[in-house]
Each structure stands twice: as structure tokens, then as C-alpha cells.
Length: 618
Image (cartoon, rainbow, N blue to C red; front, side, top):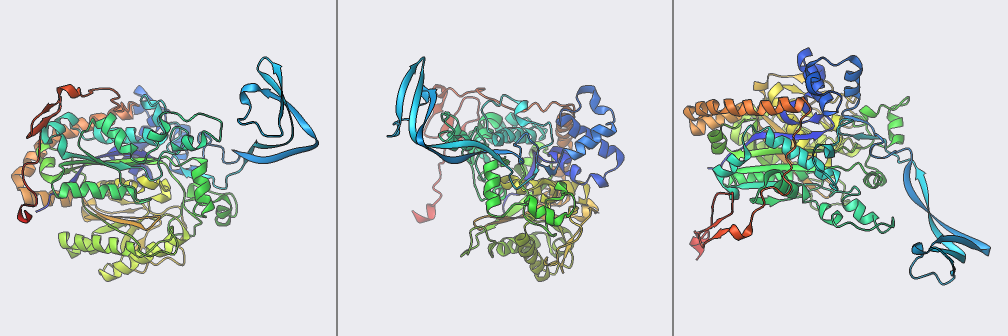
């Protein structure tokens, strides 16, 4: 009998805003919200963006502020806080020559080593020299337009590094700190209590970026330094590693000494890390697992790379879709006429507990992750092309869900969160997978959502966006439609699919399971099955009994109250990000050791393995 990985908290930030308490999800479906709920979401975003603070948060937004909030979230034209796509800096190589030679002056300290053979150098004193040469190779400052102008950007005015001492941290790691902090504080439980209950060895953290940290404070600056005439810093290499989101959260948010890992799988990275967490809990290797991803890919080099591949929605491509003025807010167009995907930035985190621990602590129950299936594509003609592995992941997730919940839940009470990258190839291949498998499993009209239409492609965090949106759907019952397209493209397979172009409202109790699908470059396919809260509660009651459920409900009252108090603080503009730099350091001289236990100061004792796991073989 395996343990059930229950989702007890979630948090993060993306172009829709803050993820905890379903706030980012509600930004996606705002058109379906009542006036009071809509005003609450807008007020929270205005606070996050620095437009409101303190007592102002309870006052209605004026029309101009509301318009600014709406226009400054989700996918939109790229803002100059990243770079000016119309005038992006680059170096133009040039070879200069003159029949009579050239003479110029410069600082002596700027002389190259060794001197070119044809250089004649004369000292002018005071650190200056005169150089005469026949020819000269130079790099000239120049500017050109980058052919991509849309992106999924964090809400304008919200800068993650402003909320803690983030000096020299790449933007992706700033996001990781804030996202994990949001998830931990939305738990409604003191983290130290959790550690003391389960012990440090029963906690896992799995998180990663897919592309590393590529801004000037990470690998971007590391690789540019010599060519720009700068020095490499002592931090750029270390902070550029893809494992840093996990490492930062272990060290500065949780203070965790438990299991850690960073699994990278291109666009499927979040689900790869979620799989590691689910396996830990299902087999009893961990009782608590923190899962996350962070990506900040809005740098010119990344955009250049994807543009050269023909993967992004370019300005020219969008002009063909929008003959008049380009609507950059509709640049990401899953399953419609499209021309490439739209990059986005974001971070998403979830905290899983085994079912017994969730009940014991009175934790909030937002759902459960039953499993994550991963398959490669096999032989490929192109590393970026889709392949057959995704048929396996989706089919395995569907079949196991049917075995757990039955035919009714699969056929009539499930929905799909599509990878939905907004490329012409994806719309054909992914829709074919869903359509053929829906037919094979007897599903007549399978609801399909594609949140990249609103958020863009946040790469490592993309499936985290799917997870957070699914939890919102379970809570509110509104399935986001693909509102960025006017019709489904002619080559999309959808005889057994319901690809809605507008939001659909359902009774939350009528939705049992979400399938999260992800397809990554290189043949990285993953599909997760996520169960709704009412399904999870029924499963817990069957396993643990009604008395345990009633005891949990009583304990949960204070947990929920504490979580909501955090939500209220953030709405007033106080993120209070957890950043424990240099706090609670362990004095290794005080570690108590024996052949049976290791006791770290401030942590419960850790029992060392005493049983032979291969006893029947020895």
C-alpha cells in the first residue's frame, strides 16, 4: 500500500501575479468572476505592482489604475526593463585600413598583449601612448531590432529582487526565493514544526531551471565577460548552475539538510522534479517534498537562439496573423493559426505531504499528485521535433487513473492541461495524441486547456503553471478558454476534444482529475495525473476513517486561519520573503555522532540504517 502525495501548499509568481490562494489563476478567468471577487484580485495585483499600499488596499481601484493592472499583466509587448527589442546592443566587427597607415592615441593600460607585429608605440607620458599601424580589427558598438517583441512578463512594477537582500543574485534565483517563500508561508504551518515532526531526513527538495541563469549575474555574465573586457566574478559560475533553485531554497528558505535534487528535462523540467517528489512520498523515502522550478529567460541571447531555430512568434509572423496592428497580447495562440511560441518568466512551487502526515498536522488539502509518467521519443530526425514518447506518457496516466478512480472519472470528470506551446507543429501533433487516446478510452468530448495562451512559455516552470491553474479549476470550477484565438486551426485534431475558445463554468465537484502534459526538446515527455480535493478527501476517509477526517477538520481551522493571515499581509504589500542568509548556522563541532545516530544541533536525531535491504540475497 503506497502513500498518497497530498498537495498541502503552493505558491509562486508568473505573468498573472502571485500563485498562492489561486490569485494568479483568477487573473486568467477574471471575466467570469463576480464584482467583489474581481475587485479583490485587482487590488492584490495593484499592491504587488507597487500601485497601492497600506490602508489603500481596501479601497476600490480607480478606472486608470484598473486599466494599468490589466494591461501590465499576462503576455504583452516586451518592456524596456529587460532590453529594447527595437534597439538591442551588439558588436559589429570591422577591419580598418589606410594606405598611409593609421595613427591614434590611447591609454597605455589598454594596450593589447602581445602587441600586434605592425604596431609602433610611442609614449606620450601621463599614461598615454600614440600608436601607428597599417590595419586594425575592431568591434563597433551597434544596435539592431530583435525580431521578437512579445513575452510573458511579471506584472509591471513587481521586481522580485526588491523584496529581500538579493545583491548579485540572478533574476531566476530571485524568483526561486520569492516563489518558495510564498508556498511555505501559505502552508499555515510553522516549518520548524514540520521538521520536528518528521525529522530532517524525511524531507526532499527537488527544483531546477532548464536553461540555467543566463543574465549578467549568472552564466550570461560568465560567458560574456572576456569578450566585453570585464572580469569574471566569483559568483557567476556557481549561481549559473541549473541546480541553484533547489540549492537556494534549501539554504535560505527552508534550512533543509534532507534529500535534494535538480532534474532537468527541457520544457518538462517541472514534471521531472515532481516525479522525483512523488516517488519519494509514494515509497516512503520522504514524508514531505518541496517541488519547484524557476526560469528567467527574457535575455537577448536566449531570444536570439530560439528565433534562429524559428521557434518563437516573430514580428513578421504576427503581422501575417494580424494584418492591421499587431495584438501582442494574443501572440501566444495554442491550437489556432499561430507562428511560434512566446517566452515567459516565472516560478512555481508546491509542497507535498504523505496522506497520514497531512491529516496529523491538519494541513490544507488542495489535491494530490497520483503519478507522473516519463518517456523518451526514441530515434529522432531532429532534436527539437516531437515523437512517440508522449503517446506513452498520456496513455499510462489515463490507464492508471481509470484503475484508481474508475471509468466515470476518466470519461466524464477529467480535463487536460495541454503543453499547447503555440507552434504549428505542436497544434497538430499534440492534438492528435489527445484525440486518438480520447477515442481509445471512450471519451467523447475531452476538455482541453492551454494556459500558455495567457502566460507564455515559462520553460522549466511551465508545467508548474499548469498545476497551479488546475488547482484553481478544482477550487472555482472555471476552465480557462483559449481566448487568444478566434477559431481552431484546420489541421488540429479534435473530433473527441472540447477545445473551448471561451471560459467554461463547471461545478467543482464534477471535476475529479487533471492531466498535465509537457513536451520538451530532446524527446522529454511527461504527463502527470492530479486529483481534486474532494476525490482526495474521499480517498483519505476510506483509508483512515471518518474519525481521522473529523480530527483533521478541527486541526485545519487554525492552519487555514494562519494561511489566510499571510494572504492578507501580502495583499497589503508585505511579501515578507523568507531569506535566512547566515542564520542558524550549524557548528559542526557540536554534531553528536555514534554508529546508530547523527544529531545535528537544532534538528531531531537521524537514525542510521540498521537493516539489510537485500537480506534475501545475502
